[in-house]
Length: 342
Length: 263
Image 1 (tube, chains in turn brown, yellow):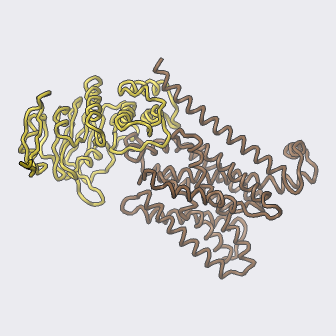
Image 2: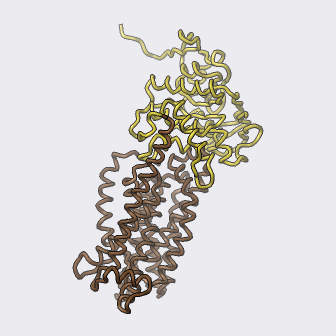
Image 3: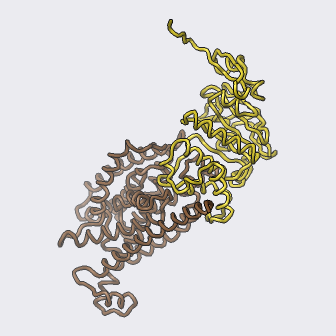
C-alpha cells in the first residue's frame, strides 16, 4: 500500500508535465492560427484550412502560403532553437544568466553577419553562414578563456558578458562607418525580425534543428543527473567533462541556427527555461516545456509586433526585449536571495 | 570487491594534496577517515571515487584500475555522496531518490519495476517513504541528508563513499545519520567509507580508522588502537586526554586548550 506512493509520485509528476505541455501546445496552435488568419486581409478559418490542404483561391494562396505561413513556421523553428539553447545553457551552468543572448553568443553571430554584409558585401545564406560561424567562434573563445584553471559557472558568465559588450562595440563601429542604405539591411542583425523570411531560410534552420533535437534527446537523461552537481553526477556514472562539452556544443549550435535564420531575438533563450520550470515545478530539466514556451513567446511577440501597435510594424526582437528586460531586472533584484552555485 | 589505493598521489591545480598514499579499504566494514583541515581526506575520498585522475599510483577495485572501468559499470559498484550535492529546485523526494537509478538504466533512462522496487526500498530503509511527495527544499537538514543517503542506496552499490555526511547537522541528526549508516553496514554488508570531523563519533562508529595529516596516513587501524593522546597531538597539534566512552567503551577525546575558568 505505502509502496505505491513512489509510483503515484512519479505518475503525478508525469501528469503535471503532460498537462503543462498540452496547454502550452494548445496556446501555440491558437497563436499560429491567429497569425495565419489575422492581417490587413482576414482569411476566414474554412478558407484557411482549404488553403493549407491546397484548395485555396489564388489570393488566399498568396497571402497564406507566401506571406504568413513562412513567418509562422520560422517563429516555431527559432522559438524551439532559442528556448532549448537557453534552457541547456542555464541547466549546464546552474545559472539563469548563462544564456546565449546574455553572454554574447548571439551578439557574436550578429557581428559576423554585419561584417559579412558591410565589409565583404555578401548577402543571403552566406551571411547566415557567417552568423553561424560567429556564434561558434565566440562560444569557443569564452569557453577557452573561462576554463583555464578550473571552469566555474560564475566566470563563464562574466567572461561572456564582457564579450557581449565588446561585440556590441564592434557592431556599433561597423554600423557607423557604413553607408546608410547598407546599414539599413544590417539592422535586422541588431534586433531579430521574422519579416521577409523565405522558405529556403526555413529549410536551412529546420534542418539544423531537426539534426540537433535527437542529440538533445539522447543527452537529456545525463543532463538530469548533471543537475545534481558534477561530483554526484560523476559518482552516478556520468562522464562529466565530455557530456558537458557535448551539451554545450549542441546548445551553441541551436543558438547559432536560430540567430543565423532571424537575427538575435532578444531574451527568448533567457526567459523560456525559467518560465517552463516555474510552470512545471517538478525539478526536471523541463526541456520540452521550455521549447513550447519558446514557440508561444515568439509567435505571440511576432503577432504583437505586427498588429498591436496600429499601423507601425516593429521587429519581433523589440517586443521580446520589452518582455525580457523587466524579467532580467526582477531576476537581478532577487539574485541575492537565492543560493549561488559555481 | 576490494577498494585499494597504491602509492597514490593527487593534485589540485598543480598543488600536491595527497602524496604516495597506500590504503586498503576492508570489505564489509565501516572505515572513517579523520584528520585536520586541508590534510587531504576529502581529496583522498574523491580519488577513491574516481573524481580525480592520479598524478601517480592508482586506485584499484578488485585488482582493476578504476580508471579502466566503464563509468556506468563502476557506478553500480561504488556510490558517492559528496559534501554538497545540489537538489534541483522543485524536485520531489521520490524523484530525487529515483535519479540514483541512473547507472542501472538504459540509454534513454527508461524506468523499470526494478527501479521502482529499489527506490521504495531505499526510502523505507531511510525512513523517508512518508516524505516521498514532499519537495526536497521544504525538508529539514536531517531529513534532507537521509534523502541523499536514500539516493545513494537506490544506486545499490557494494561500496558507499560519503564526504562529511554529518556536516551542518545538529548532534541529534548526526547520530541519526550515523545510526542509519551503521544499520546499512550491519544488515546489507555495505562497505562504508566516510570522512568525519568528530573524532568521538568516528571512534564510536568505525571498525577501521584512518588518521591523515599533510597528505599522508599517520596511522590506521581499530579505533582503540589508533585514537590515542599521542596520535591526536601529532596529527592535530592538540593536547588532549583520551578516556573511555562511558556508553560504548570507545575512545573519547577530551581536548585541552589554553582555557582556564576564572576563579
